[in-house]
Length: 125
Image 1 (tube, rainbow, N blue to C red):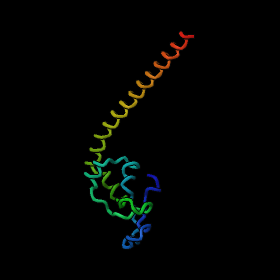
Image 2 (image 1 turned 90 degrees about the vertical axis):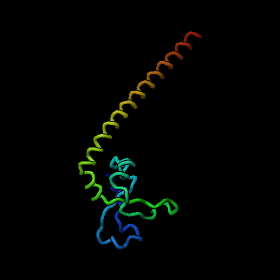
Image 3 (image 1 turned 180 degrees about the vertical axis):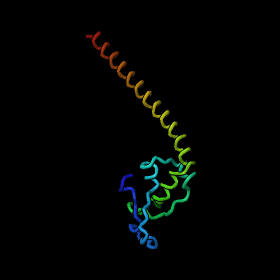
Image 4 (image 1 turned 120 degrees about the vertical axis):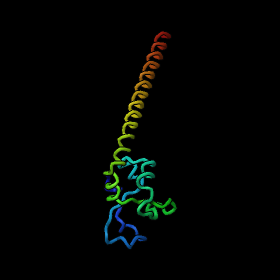
């Protein structure tokens, strides 16, 4: 996981009560991008964030949902999480294979169109 996505509570003034523990948190976006969680997984396995804080980057943005790294790691080791992960891993592989095939077909079609266009321009000359 990217160290920039891990937040220490002492960075936020409003959570002074937990500063001494130096617990590490990750933002919801880090769960999704950095660890591969989906919104559905978050709602099933960790629906209530450990902490919500004012967004340090944009004051008008929604509050940031923070999740304890140790709890995230504990959840990822459970049997139910692993089963769910394996089930969606298969779906992701199928989707990736379909995307690659669509890309290959589109590229082949583009090459075919390009060759047809070149052939037509050679006939005019």
